[in-house]
Image 1 (tube, rainbow, N blue to C red):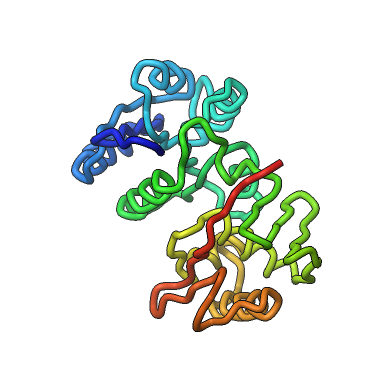
Image 2: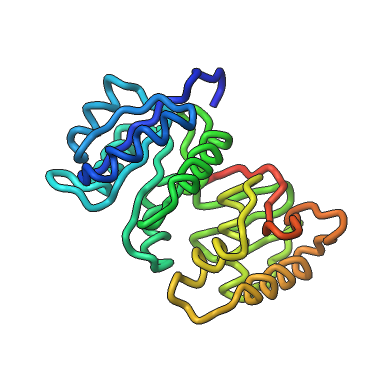
Length: 241
């Protein structure tokens, strides 16, 4: 995000006082400067005077919900990173969050440590005034192009056939470059929290991607395995229209 402010400024937006009362001090102990707003209208006002580096934004709130507040920010050309707090664990709900311009999402209830990890990951890859990868139609890494709208993957000018789940796994990895993603998180994001699949399903789709992309597991160009932790997309990803 260019020259770093110290500490990072986080705007926490949630109408549940029980959440903000406990979460704001936790984020401050993690090293952030925190401001709190109770609804979308208040959040937009605080964005103007607090100038946050990142916004943690609940979806379901009175007056102005989180989705509408996010839309207004993006329509105004404000690309401050946003993590949406959702309450539905379906992949379609999460895809909608990203399509609307969120940089990431976290399903309630969540562990505060997980939120801190997501905040730091989003801040690492964010660039001032630049739309997030989540809003891009195409994701590009060298000769690899993932067209999110057409649901196509092209490598060195040649289309690569992938199953729907493998495409979604690759898309999620490329949307979170240089971030370690556990099998459980990939399973949750792609298959859904209530889908009857084991983490082995993730490994199967990763193996499919490696074959399709000719990606060497020992010297990967794209997908790195971290034993006991999960997977990481190691290439530099650029977004485009």
